[in-house]
Image (tube, rainbow over all chains, first blue to last red; front, top):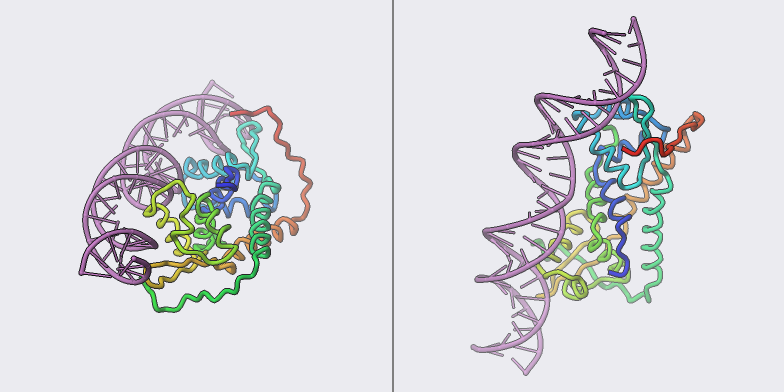
Length: 111
Length: 111
DNA sequence: GCAATACTTAGCCTTATGGCACACTATTCG
DNA sequence: CGAATAGTGTGCCATAAGGCTAAGTATTGC
C-alpha cells in the first residue's frame, strides 16, 4: 500500500459522477451560483447540493455565501493531483526493464 | 448533459479505489498473474478478484486465463481518456473571456 | 490419480451513494 | 411587512460497493 492517497481517492470519486464532471466543466468558465449551476440538471436542488458538497469536500471547488447566494469556483490546482498521478504512472511504465511483452489476450477465453 | 460519458464514469470509478490504483501501478511494470498481484493486499482473494473484474469491466486492464492462471495486463490507452478529459478541461478554462475573477472565499462563511 | 494450486461462484452483510419529498431559514424586492 | 427567492436540513429509500466465508472447479505436480 505504499502509494495510498486519500486525496486521490476523493478527487477520482468526485470526478466519477457525470453531474459533478459537468459542474467542473462549467466552473472552468468562471464562478457561478448554485442556482445557475443547477439549471439544466434533471434533479432537485437538494440532490444537486449534495454534488456541490461532494466537490467541495474533495477540494475540487470552493464555495462562499454572500447574502442568500452561494457562489462556487473551481480549484484548478486540485485537478493537478490527477495529472501527477498519471505522470507517475508513466514514469513507472517507462522505467520497466522491458521484459518483452509476449502476453496476448486472444479470444480463447471469454468467461 | 452535453458531455456525458459512460466510459469516463467507469475509468474514474475504477481509479477511485486505492487497491485498484495500486494494481494499475504494478501492472505498469508488466503483466502479472492474479495471484502475484493479490500478494500484499489485506483482503481475501474473492474480494481482490472483484477489483480485478472492475478494472477489466472498465477497460483499464485485459486478462486471459492460461491453464489455471489468469494473467492481467494494463491497457494504457484507456488511461488516455483521463488525459483527454483534463485536456478538454484546460481548453475550457483557457477559452474563457477572462471575466475578472474578483471572487474570493473568505472565512466569513463556515457552514 | 491424489493433492495442492489457482482461481470461481454463491450468498450474506454493512456502509456509502444518489435521488426524493417536505418543511424550514435567511435575504431581498416591492 | 409580506412575498418571492435561494438555499438548507431532515428523513427516507433503493441500489451499488467492498468485504467476508464456505464450497466448488479446473490444472498441474508428484
